Amino acid sequence: MADKPYPFYIKATVILIGLFYLVSILSALSGILVPFAFAVLFSILLNPLYNRLLRFKLPRPIAVLLTVLLGVAFTTLVVYLLSSQVAQFGQSFPVLKVRFGQMTDSLEHWIRGQFGISIQKQLLFIKNAVDSSQAAIGSVLGTLLGTVSLLLIIPIYVFMLLLYKNLIINFVYEVFSEEHSKNVGAILAQTKSAIQSYIVGLLIEMIIVSSLNSLALFIIGVKYALLLGVIGGIINVLPYIGGFVAILLPVLIAMITQGGYSAPLEVIGSYLLIQFVDSNIIFPRFVSIKVQINALISLIAVFLGNAMWGIYGMFLMLPMVAVLKIIFDRVEELKPWGKLLGDEVPVVHMGQVWGRRGRKKKMEPAAAPFKGAIE
Image: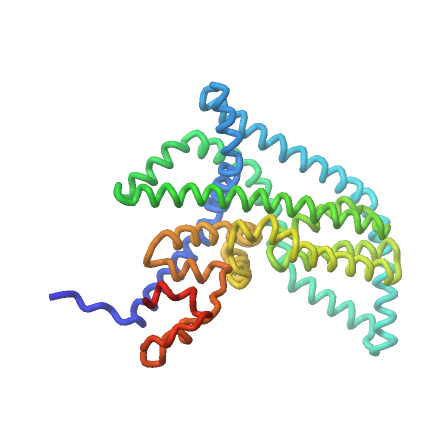
């Protein structure tokens, strides 16, 4: 006698419980999985360089070591250039602190004159806000300290992943039966191409947006234009929310260093224009076409990554979702989920193709995308 299939609500409940425990386990193991996930991305990005070094008949360990050293050298150069700008910013910090104090004093007197709120009440409100945000400040400091440990452990992971690349790939093939080897190979190749394209696209977007930000701030006359522009370009990597967060710091610096409202308004206007160009030209050209994840899923993935792994998760979740889409598109039972993650919107929904009682309606030209599914 055939086994009776479980009802949908039981299957859905089991899936939700499984997802809950999976996310909980991933969150608990963030200290191990986050650097490993970054190492996987960087090892895939550096893999072409590693393969090129192998063509020179170098021993495999030497080729891996040179690849990692070149990656570390490039990262060190970028950090050095940024640190020199940060040092200049630090030298001017006492002056900025005095001007910021003067600006806050004028703002307090203006609030007291306009709304009748005493300065004591304003200071009490600020104190309560600072006390309530101590946890957030501690989280940011923890993230900065965690970044230092990441920079130390990631090169070791990258070295090991490149050194044992063949072993890992053979393991993936052997886990599945021989009849699925062709599909597994296609998934691995497409995953490698998608991740490489995604990271390269993000780097190109970061460079272009940083250059535009720095140029706009330089024209407006805001100090530390290069540093603020690069910081904005890095934060802009966070999909859909990074661009708006990146506006805050240059606006604050413009208000402190130049006074008045003309410079901050010019900064806001220029950044919004850059965001428009980025969203409609730069990002679709270099990033989104190669990842093919729709905006809704991308936004959910960013928030889920933040809830699971913090700021690091916001960077990592989108390529992870892209890999899931590649797998879903190759597995027959999971293809509807792959379509849900993608950015191809059907002309009509299936309810318009099928009648209320499940009968096929007369085929209209607009329902052509479903022609193969209903014939």
